[in-house]
Length: 190
Ligand SMILES: CC(C)(COP(=O)(O)OP(=O)(O)OC[C@H]1O[C@@H](n2cnc3c(N)ncnc32)[C@H](O)[C@@H]1OP(=O)(O)O)[C@@H](O)C(=O)NCCC(=O)NCCS
Image (tube, rainbow, N blue to C red):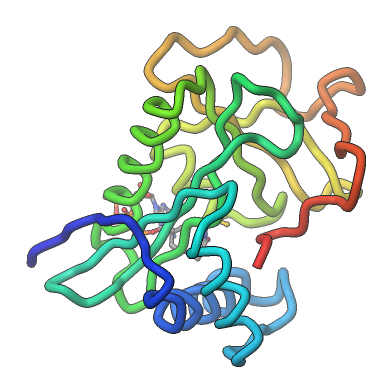
């Protein structure tokens, strides 16, 4: 099978929304409410893909769009050295086929190319599938929590040695990040 990753275009919005909705419902299960495809969601994605703070790519498997990923500057914390991995999602029909790996590789290269020195992402605290994937991709928990403990953060040192982390994985009070001023980031954003 031929797998390529290319920049996303506004015309990819309908297929991206289908993947977003299917992977959300299949992946999060009872952790999150079921979501549906609707024209408003497609329009939000079309606008998002037309330009903004996030750079998006799609993975095509034999020319069929199978997944997508985005990166941008970190929103929480706001830190110019930190690049954030935004949503990454793969059509459930293609899980465990290496599509997520290819997307993650592109995203991490994009974070480095953009000049960030470290990567951050936020995910659901009880979400084992996502956490195992992120750990396999070289991400490590950094102790950050938000949304009353429902979300936790991971960091990626982008090939540099990981910062030493002392003690158990549960965060101490001073490791807990705060939500920046303004509306709190939603999860995922669209
Ligand atoms: C998480 C997700 C993006 C992974 O995509 P994928 O294409 O299946 O990932 P890959 O096939 O490249 O898997 C790479 C490695 O990650 C790990 N991994 C992925 N899914 C896993 C799972 N369910 N359980 C354990 N490890 C897993 C494995 O080490 C895997 O390598 P292997 O298959 O050789 O053992 C996909 O499951 C998805 O879209 N889920 C719903 C949305 C989501 O969870 N997004 C991320 C969190 S918000």
